[in-house]
Length: 223
DNA sequence: TTCCTGCAAC
DNA sequence: GTTGCTGGAA
Image 1 (cartoon, rainbow, N blue to C red):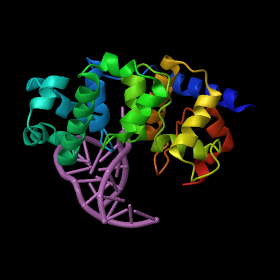
Image 2 (cartoon, protein in one colour; image 1 turned 120 degrees about the vertical axis):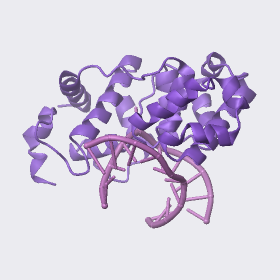
Image 3 (cartoon, rainbow, N blue to C red; image 1 turned 30 degrees about the vertical axis):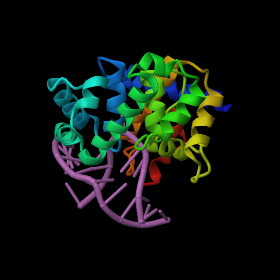
Image 4 (tube, rainbow, N blue to C red; image 1 turned 60 degrees about the vertical axis):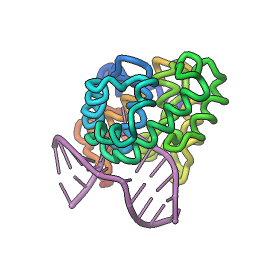
């Protein structure tokens, strides 16, 4: 079976088990960008509380977020953890957005994808996963987001052999073997997160794992 | 105690 | 390559 077929089978297994995830949960594209930074190494449940605080305070837009003091901002996002460093990162991002694109996400996303990705990566506090989450979930640009879950799951499936594979190489593997389709990329990454959280943990809970080929390989005996 | 939709700095 | 950043839930 080809990589393309295996990736689609796994996708089908996941979608059948978990259903559509309807990512990214947000009212605006700007909210997606903020959430992408706040959720770095952080449970989404905690990010929601921080987002709610930002909304209640009326600062969840580029202009107001730029005006609010960094100390005030840090206080508002305490529930999402790393609040001092994330306040700085949000400030870096809105500074970038306002300076380069007049605070206009439409203008930002109208830039060429490769150019925009490189630019985002130069913003302190935005790494590859955050940049790609913004491009896919806020910009509707067909970029596949990979993460620690992706690497762990597909290593266990032996679809990834090299444990030292880089972010870009892992992303490239998916983008070479899937059609460049925004809804597909959107749903696939969300489903990988669900599998990583609920079954393919560091200590795998393989009982009930929805991936057929994983069960066939009897990976359960590892752990 | 562990882990969470990472990243930068050292 | 290792460490610091952080609250909150399981």
